[in-house]
Each structure stands twice: as structure tokens, then as C-alpha cells.
Length: 65
Image (cartoon, rainbow, N blue to C red; front, side, top):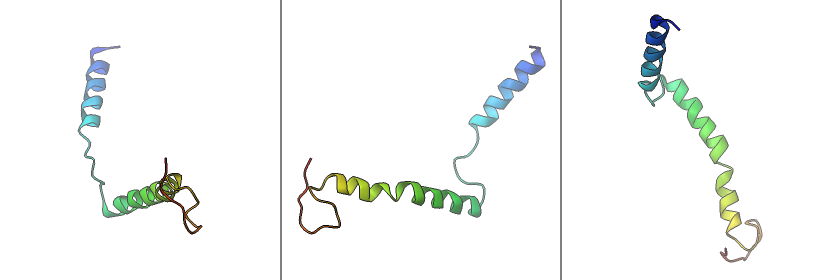
């Protein structure tokens, strides 16, 4: 590796570390929100049902471990 390659590699890692965590546009934010809903949404009833003694669509049941 030459000195230029080393300098460019260092610059790439510094600029990659400075990227903002916020979306670049409103459309990108909507896409991230949609992905979050699709991925996390099904986990909520799954976690709730895992603590019940009966499935959540049946009446009765108690919270249990």
C-alpha cells in the first residue's frame, strides 16, 4: 500500500463515522418507519401471548411465566 492509499482509507473511515443517524429525506424516514412497523409489529402480540396461559384469542387465561 502506498501512502496515498493509507490516507484515503483513513479518510473513508472518518467520513463513515460522521454520517448522521437521521434520515436524509422525509421519504427515507417513511420507509424506515414502515420497515420498523413491519418488523417490530408482529413481535408485540407474540411477546404478549408468551406470558399468557391461553392464546390471546381465547377468553380467560392468566399471566404466567
